[in-house]
Image (tube, rainbow, N blue to C red; front, side, top):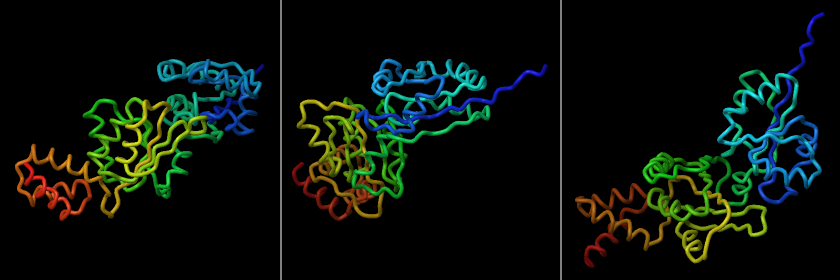
Length: 286
């Protein structure tokens, strides 16, 4: 008697709410109820969502520290005909969240991988940022070490598309300060706690956003930062910030006034005439 070969199961990549539990699609709830297993970033966190919608499907952890080890198990289940839903703690899996290794392995094995669209903090924030949406560059979380961060931002400096970043509340102010030094004082939008009780949207130049953060006792909640791409127009920069940049340059450079003005103007997309005038003014004070 020939052995019956079962068809492979399907891996569903399911987007879940980024805060408000009502931000989930009917289809996502149906899929989560019908699959055999749910691969979740944090089973304790996801249990709250499942309980809210009466979903009793078995949960198995799949996070950044065990995904590589767990992937063969999930692939085996899929090959045996089981359907699996992949979810993260919030938003769309694999977008700065675990799941990439599992999706790649499933695709390599010719297993069907189907997205169940829904929430994504990057897209939700971009839609209300007030910045161009015809082209955007998603960078997610940048390196934590200062030199690697600087190198990453230098590579993005000439990118014309709107830039999208994720950052923790502890590092958001230092990130913006570094961006001002490298990008100049571009237009931006900082979103925080999207869809939650204390959601906030701060729009303006990077320096204006920084000023708003400085007067807060503390910054809480994951942040999404949207920054205007490099354009042909001059970048608007706060005079105080520009003077600080020029003073630092005067202290570390042997260039003459004209050459230094040209270098700073080119680096920060500013008017050479304006930079030159400020250098003269500052030299008179020194």
